[in-house]
Length: 197
Image 1 (cartoon, one colour):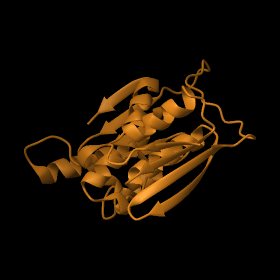
Image 2 (cartoon, helix red, strand yellow):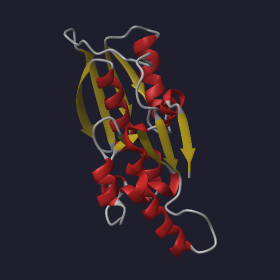
Image 3 (cartoon, helix red, strand yellow):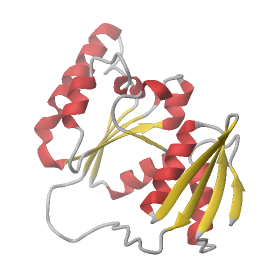
Image 4 (cartoon, helix red, strand yellow):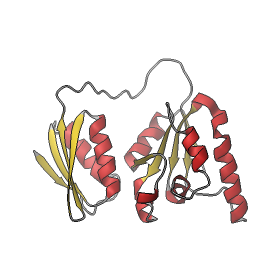
């Protein structure tokens, strides 16, 4: 088993370490040491998407993510398909308000925007929250009912783990998947169109 130490590394370094180990070095069992919940979640999700079964051990603030490739796994990653269908539109939200000048008005505009996003129909593929935008996906946010209604099916809501940690909101996230910069960049690459706020 290969052991990797990703303590004190910021997103997306822990995921990239694991990706390199299993793709370039063809590792079937791996242990990665991380020191925060966001890195643990991101690495776990990445390994599971690659057909690994996961166990996690904690020692103090360190977390040991142990992955073993499941021999019966049939997981495969589809990067792009040629089948016609809805466009993949990704909306990246980096703030909890729209515009500048009046913060109260900006927050109202953002809530109205999120409430009407479902009008995009099946073309809306990903909503990504970064920086202060992550506050919209946490406890107490007036946007939660609309986001919970949007979540599901083909639409994924991704919430930056580094940003949640920065604002001390990791345990307050109420909607979406905790994500990392590798996931965000991959989604941007796969999207037909990216809309930024």
